[in-house]
Image (tube, rainbow, N blue to C red; front, side, top):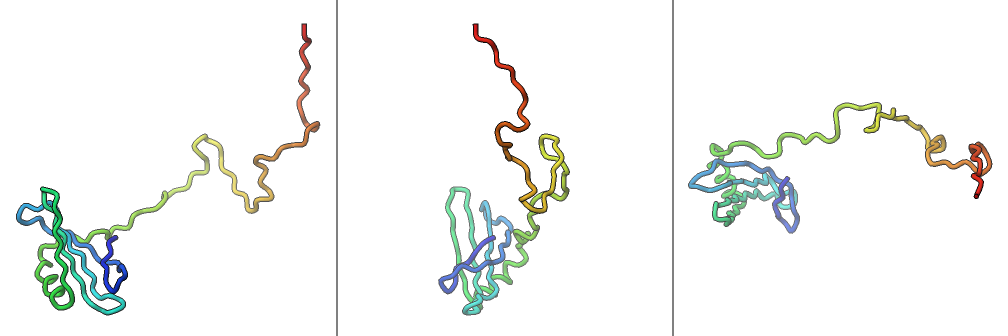
Length: 131
């Protein structure tokens, strides 16, 4: 997810991966069709070269639309179209130790960590004789 700054705010934009021309490592185009505040069109071309330098070109309005139409044949794909799955798609009835999970509808029925008062249900432990 990428953002373009326009009207002192960051707006979410579309990111396109472009063909690598003239020995560059990566070419990306960031395109904001219309700013929600001022309705300007913004295009940013970002190029990464093998020596580590980054060059950036920013065009607005009609120049941005014309430049985007010129680079449209060189677009390989739109970045971030596949949704990232969150969590798992199946549910296991047991945890990692093999104990079956229990579902409690309210926390008052939960008995974990409850300690019995002393003197009730304690096992008899005979004391050893001291010699």
